[in-house]
Amino acid sequence: MKLFFAPDTCSLSPHIILRELGLPFELVRVNNKTKRTADGRDFYTINPKGYVAALLLDNGEVLTEGPAILQYLADLQPEAGLAPPSGTWERVRLQEWLNFITSELHGGAGPLFNKDLPDKAKEIFKEKLFKRLDHLEVRLDSHPYVLGEQFSIADAYLYTVLLWMRFFAIDLGKWPSLQQYLGRIGERASVREAISEEAKTQPVLS
Image (spheres, rainbow, N blue to C red):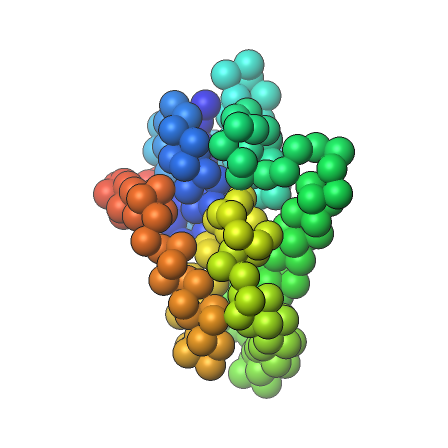
């Protein structure tokens, strides 16, 4: 498998899960501005939508969209327990959380990356985001992980999005359980390895 990624994006979450599962894969960096890959391809030929993450499977199929990639990877090794079995109520709860993270947090934070967005508009987006963080604070005050007592693919995704808060001058110290959660997830070997490996990759210049 090949994981097409760019630093400081949602592609970190499947990267973490690939390492959590010990699956063999190749990491291919993408220049988000030029849409060129480190192995010399036009990224649009891999993902016509033009954004990471994209997972190229050994059979030539390409899978996109973080929640879909995460669930696919977890189901390759169900014994690892990174996602409840398909068809169970617990799996539905996982999908509920993945949808919350992707729409309310990932999608909610997305506009804040736009440097041309007026400050007043940014404040509106932040206020909505703060309400979502309040919801997570309540959840993580009584549970070590999103689903409860065990690390799952939802945690890899949530951790990735929470890392972005530093780019928007959002101090997670206002949400102590979230801040502790971020530190707890960041201590996992798979997380440290993924972040370290992405930092080592050379930028794609053209």
